Every structure is written in C-alpha cells, then in structure tokens.
Amino acid sequence: MKSKTYFLPLSLLLLCAIQLRGQNLVPNPSFEEYTLCPDEWAQVDRATGWYAPSISNVA
Image (cartoon, rainbow, N blue to C red; front, top):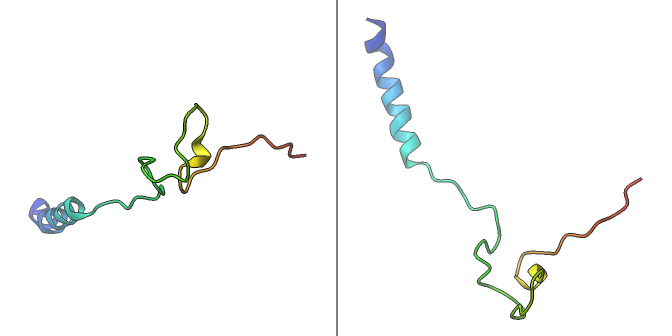
C-alpha cells in the first residue's frame, strides 16, 4: 500500500526534473565573440568575457 502512496509524488518529481534546464554560467562559452582575432596559442584574453590566468605570489 505504501508504494501507491509514493507513486504520485515521485512521478511528479520526475516530470518536473525532465522540464528543468541548467543555466549557462560561462560567458561566451564557444569563444565566438572576441575583441581581436587570436593568431597564436594562449590568447584567451582576446575572447570577450575571458581572461588569461596569471600566477601570483600569495603569502
């Protein structure tokens, strides 16, 4: 009898989960927008919304 009690809430939860879509948190994920056309490796900073990482000394 308990399996019938959980069937409706579980099925509603699964239907809602199918409809959920994640949001894109990465700006310009495909690197299609840029300020200057990159002509060499490691020019990520030319893509809009991206920056080249730098090493910093943290004490």
